[in-house]
Image 1 (spheres, rainbow, N blue to C red):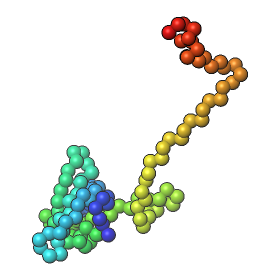
Image 2: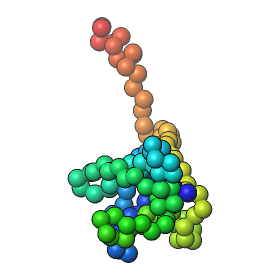
Image 3: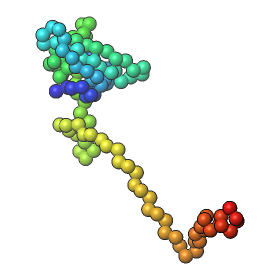
Image 4: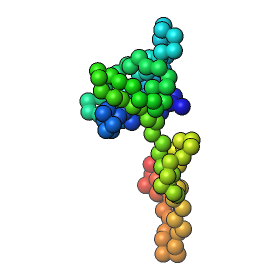
Length: 122
């Protein structure tokens, strides 16, 4: 079932036409119809609103201007198998690993700034 935030692939004349993200689904005043707001992922970005039945934005073919159209939800392939997943994964950004503090070697000498100020009379 297609919902807000999903990425869909829109087919026109049985050929992939464009990808879009579902921005909103609202009920139309006509029973059984919905306003499907799409952000078309192309340059320049374009927002369109189509009035469709729920079955149309869930994969059933319909016509627009005499052209057969179809909307399919995009399921990202899993990394392990390369096949689609039932539920989309949520990707989280991991913080970069913390660098380990350098261990002073015997040859390194630590100079105290406080001691230097005292010697210079500051």
